[in-house]
Image (tube, rainbow, N blue to C red; front, side):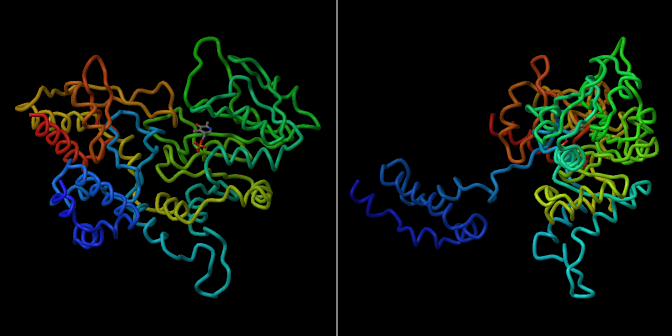
Length: 432
Ligand SMILES: *Cc1c(COP(=O)(O)O)cnc(C)c1O
């Protein structure tokens, strides 16, 4: 025992091992040193061979300085809030790297003077929605609503249908959010039916604006009626519409999903939406519409507290102006191609495990298009694979249905199929 203790390598010597020098550059000295101390203690306790300290440290260290792990989204939910919603395009990822250093986000390199913050992203947004007189970008759609309610209706009323007082998820309730700004909610209509007359009767000197919210995660069917955007114009107060999903223009796969261009064309004064849902970009809240209203929001002191960082601006510009983001590909995917990919995966695995191809219903997710099923295809594996695949790196997250693991390919990029295959193979190798 005394001998073993003497043979325990010194911290400096362990840290100087080339493998740990590389790890220190990746993870920082504190993390590596803590792992070294822990391995030395284990050697002292006789749990590991003193010769094995470096290997033990190397094996215990995380692969990167963030504890966030890459995930392959095989859930069939295209925009999964728990999985970070929209994956960014390659162009947006490159833009993040450029913006990560010092960058001219608020500086004009031609004149050497201060420049308008994020002008490239704002210009790209304006170009994408020519009907918008002006645009503004904040932290997320909730922040956009808070800014609109604060700047346009603090101490006054927001007129909104009872059928649109929604909870988005994780306790985010629109009525509470609006009330937190000091605006008063003036609820009109009933849960299932609201008419133009209901709105008109509620408008008065205290009205800040009329708010229309897209019920993005549920549907009311049966004896139900709402008032379309076009019928809410001309009431003498601003009409603010929360479209949620962030489609800028109509999409053929989701004809009923509201988009910014049609909503402005229908007469909305201000449209707010998310950047990381169907737009396929970074988390952001987009505000588009009348120049005077957007200007008031931009000049409000709260705007400074809700502004986005250079990384968001970079990724947003690349999403708007660059090649279509992954979400566009997921929406447009042809079900026969998805089936062919699922068959190829199942065929590659079938000699070793019970892997079959099935049709699978995919959905857009909390980000939009409630009730719309996107036909998809999946590989069906024994349920025991769910946990080890989820714990892998990258993690592969599917759905457990009827005692089986279903890996839906709608939200898996075609180039990720090989990664899924390798991940399943690794589990097979480990377990057999
Ligand atoms: C998702 C959603 C929001 C919240 O958007 P965030 O960008 O997550 O803040 C607000 N309104 C609607 C209609 C939504 O669908």
